[in-house]
Image (cartoon, rainbow, N blue to C red; front, side, top):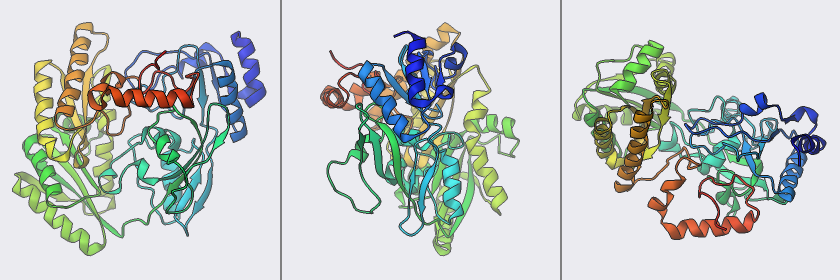
Length: 463
């Protein structure tokens, strides 16, 4: 089928204004936030109704067109890079909050709702939706569920999967499959909602999400602990958790990241610090005071040079803005930014930080490390230039070693960024061949033509 004929078919399904075939338009959908080669699709389709979405999926399956579903494209592992000559289905027009229930504490949304806008709407009702990925200002809830996104609050409140009550999705035949519901307890049938979480668009196309909401904390206290070196800061992280204190957030920034952020934002960060912890405790007022005092004592016991408590909301917001600035600030240093997602048990943070230091020196690379230290989720960020072939070869070798180190410490390939194309080659190292083959057999039954995001997560299907 020619591109013109293909466009005409899709126009009958979603309308002429919602079909893109011009090369310039298609280029914008040929990549995501991962540092991978661009792949141009044949067409981009933007359904504006659930009915049109289902018909589009069915049409693609009937004709064997490979499909990549895309929200905002903030994916960091190549999960939304399309198949060559395939179809990109955009969910950005499916952006309605269908229900926000303050009595039973849930919301029903379409997959294209932007995360931050949803969180703001929930907050306006006096409730909290805790998942707060760094991309929340532009990322969509459908993408968050597909990748099981985390965020700064994941330490205490959990990640996206902990707030998914139900997922309604289209199978490859365009049939609507319902899973989960609006009740706190629901064990009707297989846990298909759980199957969809972190499936990266390989098993179904989301139509509707039911998400859990919670009451916000009554009080909170944010603080900044400054250390002479990253090992002391890492030991403090492990000690806080070992003392059975679970802050809402517990973030780490190394010296390079601190200096880079300060140059970017002029936030008054301690540029001479070897490392910095950004910590927030929340809950009832008395609990907050008690835990804040304990955290401060633990940090000082582990050689913190200072512990500064935010005196008001403005100072608190400035602290967290500095943390959110880490990636954009680092991205300005070199032409190519490789943001990795090495995650280890929390007690192994000091070992992983030491390993990253060794790796940076061995491969002569600049690596700025920040991340959700409280849950073991570090983001070693390699600043490089992909056009420098010798350096890029060292980068690729270093990435291999980073994941070897993380797995050796009992960690995992990804805490929140997903597998996509970028990490599928490492999957056997963590899960083993039998797990991958089991998953491939399952996908081959649910998606016999292999149209749903082929090559992602598990690599190419067999046969």
